[in-house]
Image 1 (cartoon, protein in one colour):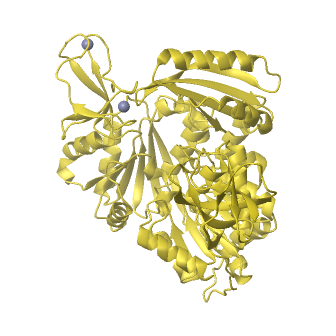
Image 2 (spheres, rainbow, N blue to C red):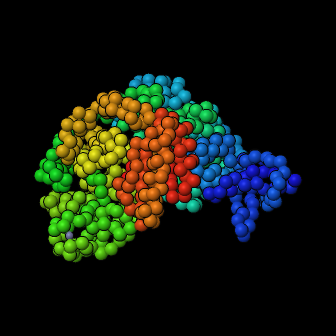
Length: 615
Ligand SMILES: [Zn+2]
Ligand SMILES: [Zn+2]
């Protein structure tokens, strides 16, 4: 009889021991009886064991699929670094039978400008590096050239990008060079497309995957290159357990497996800028000139904003408007007692949707009719504030009625599928839409050729969030939105902010910002220090608080890490659970991982290493 240690795919449990009459290969997938009812379940063979002194269940059969070595290393690292069980991590991995890949010579090869060639020569010689390239300077051509190099050797390449960039335009662009040797992969992929993609991968035909975060877990059997486009983007960080950061995992895989890693961005993260060798690609491919206009009025449709929009409409040009929130208004407040109307399950102001006559919580999706009087003082002077995309669209239609412009809303309320995303981008590119009003979705690298005005509203609140990365993320967002205008020719960028000095200093000079911000963070924050955030959630406020205070007392005794804050979370209630946090800092991640492991003995605690979210 053979005995094996197995990871049960999708299980929160530790690894288990099973017996088998037949021999099983390490890292192969098997079916085992699992749980009280012995239901068939997928599992991975991890280790051969000697006969244990307890009863074991028998493995039913082999499936023929395996976890590739790269996948196994990645899963083990995620399990260790983000402190969660291996079986649970494996649930998001796709498995295939072993396969071979074949070299491919693209019919059409990309041609680079002298400057792009210089960048390429530098980058291709590094095991990992950063391409710090202005918007429109042509970084995609450099990616394509590098991918070609690996394809010619029969090695696979992974091109990671934010989900929203995986558009038909991108598919078309890649197919010019890579014909049918690539697949697109994202979280909203249909079952049919997914099966087709996996089948093509299994046949060894696929040498390139262009995909979102989850593509990192695909069964690559000969991965030679990972490119992380828009590497600064927050969508690489998961907001559920395990709280992985796909960019960091790509860098890890690169070091571990001799895979080349290239990160790219027009506004690189401070961490990558500090840690990676970089090439600075300046200038835009198309001649472009930007004029920056500052508007210090309060949030909303000011006369200056209207004036600039009219200028664009008269010139038959297009405009994009960025706004941080959706709905009509993000807040409804009582003028009498000052209370905001909050979700009963979350300590969050409810957003107002006028047409549907309802208030909605953007955290737990709870909805209720719009209150007619204040629930606290019964006063009737309710006032909506913090304008959202839907309201701005309505106000624009009225204020610009003489032009009867086509205005479209571009946010998570409207863009609920890839089909809708593609439809709206197509209409905008064909100039069927004059003004696109959207949230951070707007900032992603879509190319719009007739936009001569970018309007950026409501960033101040973003700038003052209690997050050490607030100014970095805020400036990056402003620059990304600004970059949507003037891909060809002159353009104006209007920034509505009371922080004119900050934007004026840095909006044209991200390089200087990175230098200054490095100074600000020294000895305090990443990339110089590591952070761990623990969040305790409990239905009873007292219990959550007690556990938080107990852990705080324990952590204050530590020498390996410093407790820099604890207490009630900024959003103290979500989904009827009270939330408390502890924030720890150390010079190494190993110390923090030990703390995370200790704290997670308590099931109310979740650990987020290298956190992005401090709410
Ligand atoms: Zn009131
Ligand atoms: Zn809620």
